[in-house]
Amino acid sequence: MAKTIKIFDTTLRDGEQSPGCSMNLKEKIEMAQQLERMNVDVIEAGFAAASPGDLHSIQEISKHIKNCTVASLARAHKDDIDKAWESLKFAEKPRIHVFLATSPIHMEYKLKMTPEEVLISSEKMVTYAKSLCNDIEFSAEDATRSNVDFLAQVFDKVIKAGATTINIPDTVGYTTPDEYYDFLTAIIEKCPALKTIDISVHCHNDLGLGVANSIAAIKAGVTQIECTVNGIGERAGNAALEEIVMSLNTRKDYYDIETRIDTRQIVRSSNLLSRITGVKVQPNKAIVGANAFAHESGIHQHGVLNNKETYEIMTPESIGLDTNRLVLGKHSGRHAFNDKLTQLGYELTKEELDMAFKKFKDLADKKKDVYDKDIDALVSRQKIEVPK
Ligand code: KIV
Ligand code: ZN
Image 1 (cartoon, protein in one colour):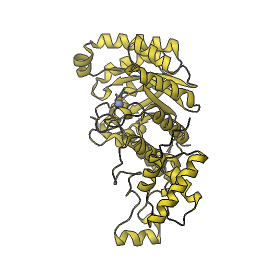
Image 2 (cartoon, rainbow, N blue to C red; image 1 turned 180 degrees about the vertical axis):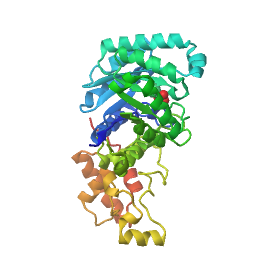
Image 3 (cartoon, rainbow, N blue to C red; image 1 turned 45 degrees about the vertical axis):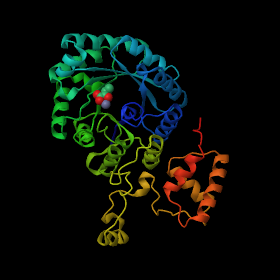
């Protein structure tokens, strides 16, 4: 039977830390609702201690989300943990996510703590977080540049203190798939208690290996993957949710792993995020780039016309893409227009739709074909309010 792994989405926390990707409250709620529609297991909604605005937005997101766990990040400080807990007070399924660095370079130059102090503080702060909330994730920041024996010791302590998920992140995107697999296998061997809880990975993309490392980690036995829509995140970004999910889907024959993601929501999520942040997806980006299902050369077009599988390893429909690429023009009806809006990540009320449809018809009278960018411009100009 296929094993199911959890998808922990950090678009609203690590993703938002990426330059040019900050979002206002309404945008965060809209994005969180789309993540829920896509069926992610966990939404990391923010870092409550970062600012009162962040704390407030986690509270508001928590009020709107019913089916996913909502996580709030905290350093291993009592004050941060209190703020995280305060931010989660309306959450149906709250998770406090405590992190502390374990690598020699971070301990010495950033934390100015000895390994012994890190060990004590991890245990103490997880114990404190557990006194508030049942669902506790602990992350050993910069794990892949940490000593394996030391990590095993830290994990033993925090699992005994009540951590229910242990995250072993590749914070600086330093590791490679083979090395990560060996590293995770060694830690699991040295700390058998890991097998009794969820093991998570969180891979950054500094060497372009975030997704490959996450897939290698699944083979080593991890049960949760942390990722972001379109791969946004600190520096070169985080592992991209759509690439991980579609790799596992497309190669289920080899991995026999499932996620709970509704893959037909992938394009909509990607478009919504791009629209909100104004950060475009590169055309050749895997899965969601504009060219991901485009065929230019005659040989490829000929192959695809005879049998799509000659050059397509997944169907456009499986990610929610309009396969026949309907071109909207003056003859198009309300239905096709509304379908296109949904695909572009818009959810309009009846009144907003009426107004937008009228504008679309006016434009279609003046222009032969109406493209996605025209519709984007048209609806954005209408200043549509985000639904509650
Ligand atoms: O990259 C990282 O290590 C993080 C942690 C806070 C999980 O973002
Ligand atoms: Zn990160």
